[in-house]
Length: 187
Image 1: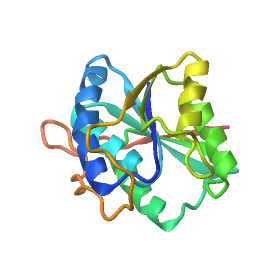
Image 2: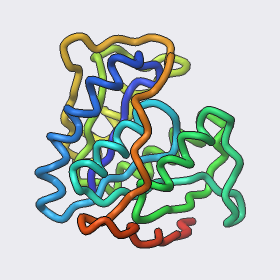
Image 3: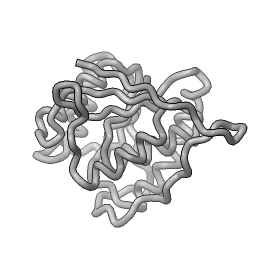
């Protein structure tokens, strides 16, 4: 399984740059029969999901849950989660509070331990009170997970003023609708 981590404040032009870069990197992984793993959220997770779909990589989206029931996400993340659900072949419910920063970091750490590779969209800056990218990179490496750092020329932080256009509903190569997603509950 391959996952993505990165700065939460990437600019819209950076996200557009990353979609093609991620697609080309994920194509090889798709040929090997792997799957992509992403925790639902706006920005990079959606771009990763779109790139995975374009590359032919199976996508697994993680949603927060409380007592086995999906937890409510904030408005920007809720819209992003909806798109990720359409792109995903599988959904995993993981127990954590999406409003608790520490719980989100712990959920990310748990997910990274189950991956063979992580793509980190990271400028090399240290973690701060909001951005834990450096921490997650160090965590993955300390657990023997292969980490590939991406920071394309022209990448920048900034407000999300929009996202790249939406993909149509997932379809098979023959044009028929993609199969229904499996939902798996993890404790």
